Amino acid sequence: MLEEELINYKISGIALRTAANLHHFKISSIIREEEQIQKMEELEKLRQRHSRTIPKSLPQPISPKMQIATKDELFEAMRAAIIETMQKKEKLRRRRLRQEEQKQKRLRRLSQAKLPKELLKHISGKEQTVEELHESWYNRIKATINLNNKDSSFFDLLHIIKNEEESTIGRKFAFVRMFLALMFLSTGNKLTLFQADEFKDISISMK
Image (tube, rainbow, N blue to C red; front, side, top):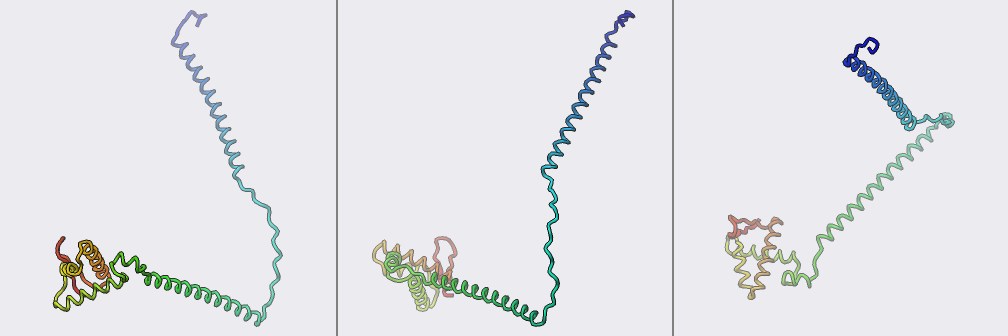
């Protein structure tokens, strides 16, 4: 272009850009090939690291020759197997019975558990067990229903307590003991309690 005195910057720019693109493509392709080679090497290292080597074949034990069992030997083996099975069943049965016996003893111990009379005196006001307190109220309610020939009520029992207890504190404790006795007798399917509305009288009838 200089010899021909023809200066054209557009043509020189296109030539320069084309050369730059070819150079960039060559460099990029070399980088991609190098990255691919590195990935293959890393995969090969990872494969060798986690690959399991197959062990050599282990020497097999010499298999014994087949033997002919006699009828007595067969019966003896069957007898031993039966005895062993029966012994295991007997052990399991005895263990089950022992566990059941321990469970029954624990239930009886829990059912017979009673508080000391000194503590019961502060709780119930009398030297009696909780069962005796509940039975006492049950008998009194039963007698009241039979005497009046109609169902009793919570207010009727309050009148009984007011007539028996002189002090205000004694009445309050008696009210609480009586109410708890009613709850336990109701859950024990001895009494039926019915209240039509809140803060109303509670009807008490026998089961």
